[in-house]
Length: 638
View 1 (cartoon, rainbow, N blue to C red):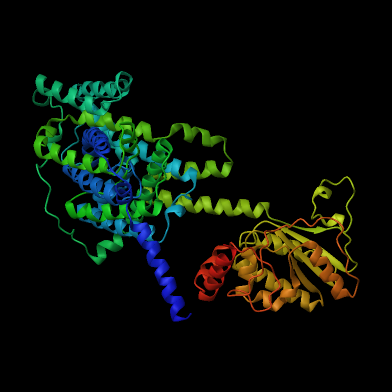
View 2: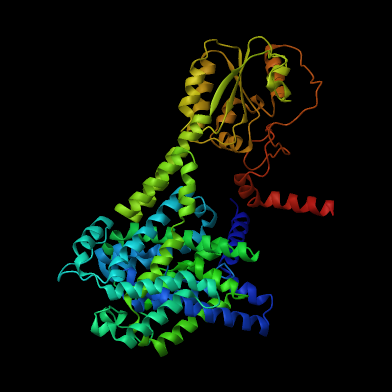
């Protein structure tokens, strides 16, 4: 590649990175921002900030860390996600999706291990954004997402049982991280139930459920927390009857800690690499899902790669300020929109409000009953479980049901990291099997009955005269490693040795290395049998792949034809028969464009290929001569 070409490519890359790294807050304010817009953002940020207070505390305690770490996360990460993210209305902070994975990391490696994993996850998210993985994350199979989300909901609810019922465990007994261990311990501790805690929990749960029917302006969870806290304090149940409060086990500070790097070591990084990857994937899924929901509510369009970069920055700085993993929160984002938010400034206001509440009212938060927080998390678990989608998926193909159940069971019984890995792998294997099952190779007869349904196909071989000594096979489906054995078996059953074998590929959209190897083997076999191989109706991606592998040059570019008529006439030419002009209108079977000589096809290539193939576009824009020709043609047209 020439120096000019390199500089041109580098300039384009830098421009692309600059576009991805430009946050939505900058773009939004650049378009114009009025006093009225600020008032809308101020009001919505105030309401969401108040809503986020009990949730941040509850998620932190449920994750096995102190309540202050949830507040630090909501403040620091919430601020950074709003400033650097790619969604106009995103509200970030700790969420229920992280509870399971965070609890497991803290139980095994302590907070230093969690801080290391969170920082690593932040770096991964930034890399995901720069590498344009925003669209790829959306390809996580739906049954996997539904399965692990339902599993997380079960774990969240299960973890709040002792707080709701006021269980007390024997001295020295720590609550297990796994679901089976939790259930065993709860049954053993059932005789320690605190009925006053249960009454507070039921009251809070009833308020959470029925308050939205009265008004949606004030969050039901906040009302439940305030009412239950006042009741416990006025009646003295915390001192008289042992109702547990946040202050019973934790202390909420009245300030933000000074930034400091966690104790990072190579050994710890190796241990928490897999959990860090899980945090990154979960954060990406949750944040992009939240952004999509916001788009649907407002008619806007988020930028997924910029959003991942913003999420990454937030997760890098969150542990530096003593926080935990953060991502976009769907419920808080929806509340932000419903209360009239205009820009990411509302997310900044929400973080500032939380900071002020912690500084001024932090000590009062210690009075909140644990049973009330458990009730709030019960509602969160119910809302996130997606039971409708879970039940609906049982009407899907058996393979999807299998993926759903495996992911769900592994999340609850084993571990979230294992569940996602196994779920995605199982879904991929089952998808490959389905694609292999629908792939076909058929020998096409020279004559078809007039009543055959395929006669209506303008490219049907039955409507054409196939010369003697010519055999036509048609491949249907992608030529990838999962289907190659089926293709080879069908071709191996070919008993005759025709003079010419035409391989129709009009229904082969893609080919991988195994498919290329199969074509090479078929070419060698044909030569050994003195048979000429012709390819017909080859799509753009297979043409590019075969060209780069050198197969097209070995075959002879004159033996790769655009359609069946051209292939049959090439066969006649090789057999010394007269060319037959088609009397019917030609209907292309693939999207052919103008012939491109450079830079990916040898000179004098006569294979017309679709111009919009991604690999072709990448190489074309890096070719300065092509750019000059393109600009000249544009000027000529204008």
